Length: 567
Figure (cartoon, rainbow, N blue to C red):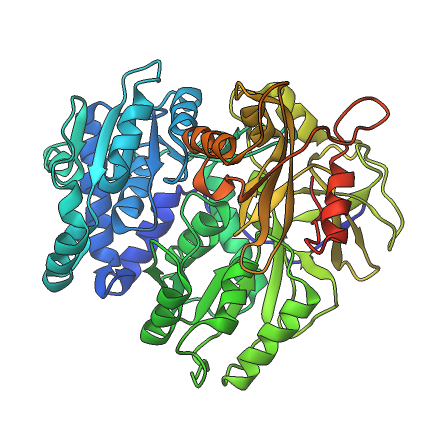
């Protein structure tokens, strides 16, 4: 298979993620690595914080290969913990802090985590989740106020923090600040061991079945992604420049691009733990970041954010969109907004999957072909094949997008069958990742996303797998069966809608809807909750008796809800 590959080749050093950051810290110890609500941490101080946390993990008994779950937003303790685990060869299991209790239990069980780090505001949920875990789990509890300057700290404690001051208050729970005290200087840190076949990070996606899958990624995967992204971006990444790091750390895009890519090139991460239109606009104008990377909803919000009507955005060097398709109409609006506000750039669209960390394809600077998601990163080969085969289709014809390169995952956690369905060794001797997406490639190597094979809803940049939500709904005692689809939403791009058929004799009234939603909140992450539940006597079926979800999507589209592509 020929496909298309960038002629440029990069040399990837045999270093861990921590070592890549340490290398920059040795060169620029006084430059800021990250900033959190006005408080800056230099690269030199960052390394000291990481190593202190690493020694504390050793004192706890965490060793190479052990798994620790990080259930955190973008706050300083997250970065300290993530790189500390990498420093000692442990595994960072990254999960969404808004996950439902049962989901957190699943993540802890499937990864065999020995500890979990979370914020005090999520403490009770995490402790409850740990009760359903097979192995003992230590809960480490961090507090935002510990990373704020004195004035902001006092204000935060008065407004929010006082609600959580009694935590941690259970057995096997430790305050992060107390945990760090165990990291004394007499504890010897292990030698660095770079192993491209070793799992260093676990992120989660739905795989081909919609059941949450742990994606095992290595140091090489992340370092290669960061180095490739820098070359594909084509802009100077150096000290003195800033990235507005609003994409979350439990997301491949957030961890791989918003954080690790920035840190190994000496720039500064402006950490945002939460996102609202108001906070986004305020942070944008106060911090004047040079780079922004996010999902379409973030950039759509830019058009309506308060306080930006007369803003000068000439400080922007790059804006990169991923996580969902950017419509040509929205791109035109964003580009016009940037031009009207003094920016000399265009929004650039990327494409990727968590199975290859994040983006692996990006539109070139100042070059745009409508509908294209760009050209592959250096050392990354894309090919369009007849779905499920390694038979390449001619240029311009549609087929399944497959790709290969140094960012491909090691495999799905404890799931060789799913791994074999997704990663296949083809006739050219290479292992290729089958994306489950239909696309095409023109004669110049530009890739075009067409539609998805697998059912998937993308809301606010998060993947929601309808089959997973349907399984949970169908387990509710009053439900016979259900179907979940995504419908167009002006703010989220898509929202989740559930069609539900109740058991005989059950009335589909407001009380039933309330009880079903209460049940769902216990088992489904808040971002994946149905925003609408419609009760029906029956749902359309296919010839083989399956629920015809595409008919429901078409119905919603005709009704003005404009159902999306789903996989």
